Length: 328
Length: 252
Image (cartoon, rainbow over all chains, first blue to last red; front, side, top):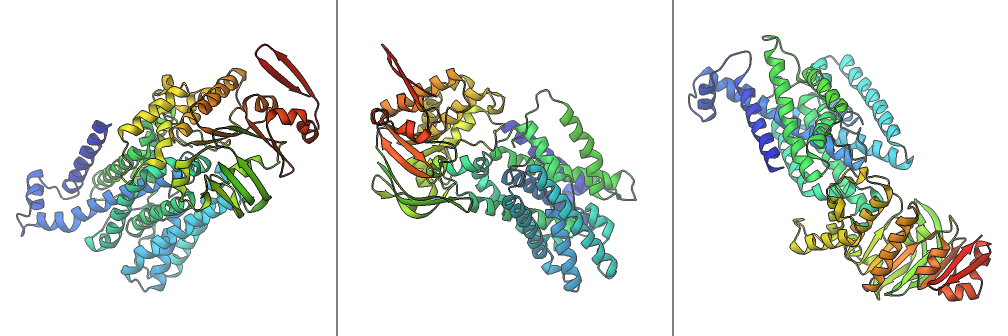
């Protein structure tokens, strides 16, 4: 297991470096390293690395970590293998809140992450409350999530179409894109994502126990409602903050946890960090390919994610041998 | 001794039990029996918080049980619920290790003692041979023993089992019954819900009979038989057989 985690760390470092190195303007590895180390402060390469590529790579990294971790958490908290920030409407809730904040806040950027978090939290509480009250089956929760999602997406579209002044590219926002990210965008959500990730690892064992089902979790002395609420808050923080700067990136939150379950098993203590690492690498790779494949044109990372993640996930689903079944 | 004083309890917001008082003796096996829907599970679920106690008190060896934090409760009474909403895709050993959860500190690090207790619990429940196998791939009987081992790993003096034998075949039932008797010999207190009345009479020291959400009687198996309590409550007839090894009861 230690080797596997180490290789994931190496993969992430590699992807991160590639994210800075590759792009429409070619840079040499040597000059990138010099710029990262703080030399050549007057060169264009330095400006490019520090104002464009580094924040973008960091944004991709945080987005992947946040969404993949949120996916794992939601799957445990709802005991539902199909739960993810995207399928149960948490992303759309955050997106809708962002649009609303832009509409009402006259484009003030500072309140956006907070709005996204509140939107995500409100949606996940609503979906969970629905599931809890109606004692709904797993399929019902997902159906409710999809319905709520499309309802909120309609809201996002309406706001954008009615108020054309909003400074968001609707297509990029709905698909999820990392272009044009600066440190300014990342400051608040980045700190919140890192804090939430750290908290998550503290909760890992409780998450495991919650995964045994409510009855057993209770018998093992877990304060189920408190832990469940804390995890919903954490996952909303993660997903909401990502949406606030990267838009509605889908797929990472569902597919990366499942890939990791198959590769690393169902123990949250490993599943959480592994999903975070792989999620970050996955978003970085997709963002790089989006920039490089049709340069100088750019495809949003969200599109590449579906192109790459979809077939890979199908391959894993069909390949039965050696695969572990999903917990829940 | 575990005592319920005038306990009223609700489940999912619906009041089920009203003013129940009952006492479970230390070091004994107590079987709770009664027709379906009589409130057996609700009564025991007061112990793990799945039922909400709306009034009354529960005392565990004189201490106010309901005032204890959840984790402390799980260190005193281990409760194996009947319903399995999730069948975890985890190796048996990992599942049994979860039984140590209430004992772990903030760092959640396993000590030598934790590891030893997990090993003993697996040996006791005869699942050590399946340690590396995934619980969702095992037969119902072995899986039930794995959950049983998890409850044992909690290392509590009181063990509460809700219908532990219901979905087991005869061999599985016999094995589990033998383990329960062994637990009593090891000084544990066992409280269990059983559907098989004959089984309850054979293995328990005290039988608590519930009927219509009330305690109909608390008696030793001998008294139950002598006073025809079971025949009255369950509206059944009894045939008793015996051989050199003991008595067997057949209800019809």
